[in-house]
Image (cartoon, rainbow, N blue to C red):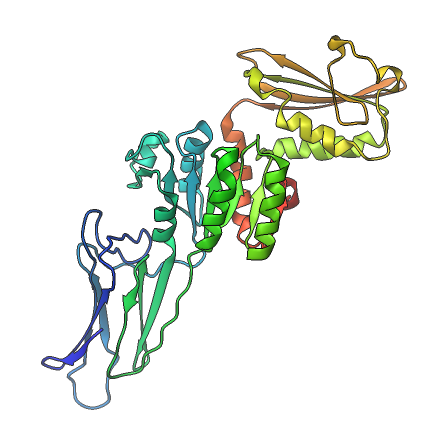
Length: 374
């Protein structure tokens, strides 16, 4: 930064140390894709009137971009990993429409360069291309904020992933740096989750993991890492609020009934038994109840698969065209109590996802299950 006087004018010029192109999606625009460097300048015009000094007017400008208001600290920047999957496409649209959130990146190994808005079927482009480099995207949103105070006047300037060399020979100056509030939402594969969470934590971002086939050993390792790094992470077997409510109701009812069976339907046989059925069976096991005592040792395939050690059985149907459905059927003398949850569209998972994003930024450790946020 240089300070000089030219005809009663004070000129402040900030140049980044690096020539890496950068873009700030909120606040002051910084460069354009493909540019070799970005330039930020703050022009301070001194009042020429005699007598008491009037409040000076300030103008913040940047090459190839117009100045805007400082970014809101409450805005959550979200990166979607697994953006081309059905869940990823729905999440892009949901995050873009959510209040207080901003889509900051879309990561996948397919459709590289395609606009995320076009990918998700939105009417307008988001000007965010699909990339396959998570580290680069995380670096670009690890926002550095600088505050300059000159004779009581505050000027905000923000740059994404730019290291800025600052010097000032006159006037008062203070600066501070803050990280952007951000969340990485991971829909990738079980083998990639651990590294993705570590990368997110390295840049100060929390994580929401929705990878139904993730191994519990991986969850245990992630929990130890998050405790050590003091970073928030949610590993969610389901993002459906309705499914979570079904599970909670099943736990309450299981104390009052000795016969419990799970009946489900899915369009894809590779997902059976479903993570929902497994989670329900785990939740109502180890509660001191032994279910279905009359034939708990039966090995008849028609009786379904036993999940857990307390006799909970699951019956799975594969019927294309039928909505994904999970029912918990409980019975006692003279009565049958049925809990049922149907999913007709992937949009049913979006309220749970938005809730998870809002809550996970407050965590300093890993939690397992969306029910902790309800």
